[in-house]
Image 1 (spheres, rainbow, N blue to C red):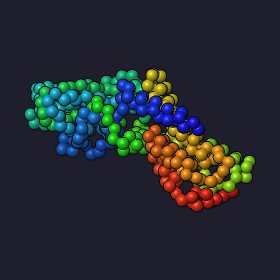
Image 2: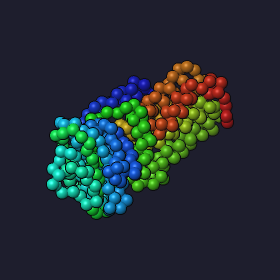
Image 3: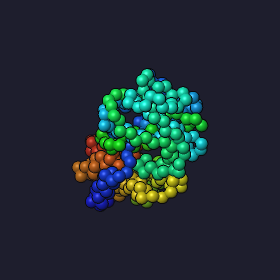
Image 4: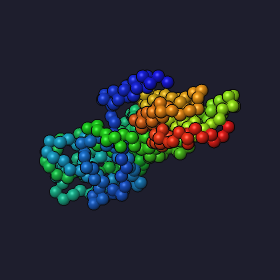
Length: 338
């Protein structure tokens, strides 16, 4: 594989992150069904998405955060449910009008006012990073006039189901947050209601195809498989499975939300794991020699590091690659089957 092309692809990915495309840090909340148990948000200006649900129409989900005068509350609610479920958004603060209306079942702190945003279903919008089609139901954009603790409540008058709360507008990822998106995507699919079969079948397909190619190569060349070849085969299957999974969810989402320019971002996220998977497979199975010298180890370590960057292999793939690059020569070239 041409390493320049690979690095160019990663560079292009990073450039895409610099354009005006929403990239939120995913989080899950729990037991936040009262003011006392409101989910605390430490940095409300940072761009977050909290994946939650409303189990019954009387249930309300609460979130709390501290703001200073002049800062901006930017929040929106969305759902993957295309039915009648359209959650409302209630923003509560010490500087809001205390005579305003309050949504039923929503707890209001003493001396607080509330701004209520009615939920109504709009057409599906496409999310490019972890591809999905979501229906936004309510949005708030407020500049606060005083310091204090503010609350957001999400509630529903009609129906129940999963919802996401997007809060903040400063798109900042810590390295661990970026890497973790590879596995966060699985939890997002479960939140959407997708089955485990739909989530993981791309990895099974990739594994079957690559193991079939490897078996054919072994039969044709009477090649003996060693530990290094086994490691690269597993990593390649995980990487290619990630790329196929992104393509699958992209196609499903585009069918609901339509094709837009941000689909290009998704295609990059799908292509890079596939390219990396091919490179790892060729590293283990495309060479005439079965030796594992320093240059080969460095390449495997590079592919492992890049896998973490492009969300390939569910984190396990890159870690296996990095671990394999550090294994002793004697272990890597040990034959396990022929």
